[in-house]
View (cartoon, helix red, strand yellow):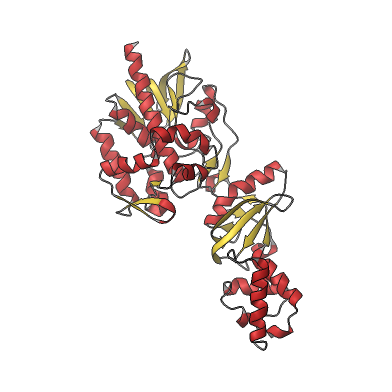
Length: 425
């Protein structure tokens, strides 16, 4: 059995690679070990499929803290605007939501998956599902074939590896591709979870006193050992039975991992600011004024609405202030410590949930060994990589999927060009 291009992995980048190769009119095979293609796409964006992000390329690269700069050349060839045009050509109308996130007007991820599958069919791309790959075979510095676990050997002029990382394993990303990359001589940088909830042994987490509490529009930072912020994200968060979760936490998580590793820490410190729009002194004066205007009112009622009630009671208790106490009887010193805990509540965290629970894998095939214009291996002829197996990772919000679709497009196009050349040789 022989094909010009074999794409391994039917996720976002693999589907895009197979379509791009198919458009070149070649004989293309897409192999996936699962029973359905596009499983990760079908669950992305809460089942609505956040296909890309419309922010300027500079901004998108900022939202890809893991080697995003590697994608500058790729974006100059096929950008997020090209992704939008690509889907619209397939008949998927898109709409823009907050922060540039692009969704199908239908709000159904499945409609995106179906449009991609229809396109594969139109381009006569052969699809094998339920076909786990055992090995990629190299010969004389070039890919030669792909071997399936059932013993089938498929000869190929070029191979695109698009099997994802190790996160969200129930969609099929179980890290199979790293061994094939290493066999070709590639370096796999250390894998770590990103976009993942954070764990903590703080007594208030252990005794679940804040479990289930959501805080909106807060600022969360990861501090270095000197107490300076390494990163700050302003979004929502939630307290859980094991630690912290929610968008701000997911975005900070990789910096917790990196800080603990860099400074060999057992615990890192995060700082939570629930009043991000006010300076500490300004907020202090505001409370003093409120107390003065109604001195007999209980402090709990005076402060009502400034922060969510459950969090307010928690902070009052931590600062040894009785919620029913009259405002006038509380010292300015105590009010100051309360204000400080609103602005800089320090939480010790001891890591994250494991990689399997992460939305995104950090680390992967070293980008130093990949041609940035083609996604081709610098070490092995006819071998291409795309998507999350590469050491490129971003925040959720359409950034990772943009990286997957852009690298998939380039890998598929160039795998086809490389295969065509072998005919001319």
